[in-house]
Image 1 (cartoon, helix red, strand yellow):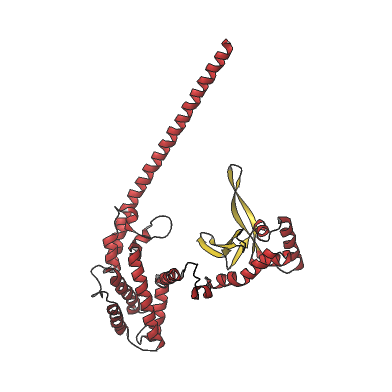
Image 2: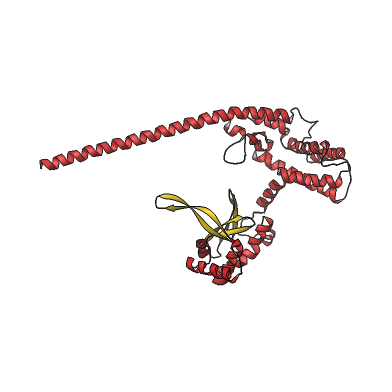
Length: 359
């Protein structure tokens, strides 16, 4: 089985053995995955000395070089303390070479999985089980709708949308010039029209209406990192509800298909005609069309959101300081209570000693 998740130091790829008894977590960095000797020993059901011996033979034979070896810092629990140590890790080429020499059933299973599923993921960034998606079993949950939702989310992301729209305009617009001012403002215009169709507000209007320093996280529903930062509050999409996000993603992906179909027909039109075509597309979906450019400029919304963020940040810092003081006070009370308990215990011990002496 195959799973992955994003991390600060790359992605974590999880491999589960076919019998389901073991799972190995590999760090995907630099287009490959990395394991320690201990992790390889667990993977191939053998001992660390055997793995170390195989690696030595592979290097000695010249099959691979030390370029397949790196080091990483790991945190390990040693007794009651956590210790950071640098350990050697080995990339996929070395892992597979060791697997061929160990010659265990587990090694065969892993090599088959790594040369197909894992390689495809490292190159493409995704893996699909086409047959399972085409023919879901009667007793298994169908994840096809979830897959479509995730693809829509990716296609509607700002970078992907800009890239696709730019390519379509370059192929179909007779007067499109990528470095011109009309081209730069046109992209923002298309985005605003789609956002207005989903929320009845432009990006600037949305920010101005929903950016609130008095609300938790300033009213944002999503942001990068573990806490809201200044850059997050000037992004309109960060304020959308899940329903609005779903509508916007559906509309955006439909629009990209609509635009790409025009590009495939090599239908040359001007940028002004593209604006009209976009309005017609929105009307066909029975959604409101943005009249004009909106009531609030982007510069005004950015200035207001920055000012409100400063007020929010001051409040947040004050609240964090208050919570830190409360935590310190609670720790002091617990310490005082412990000292009181020890004093009481000492008194009992003394009394017991005196009683014993009297006897």
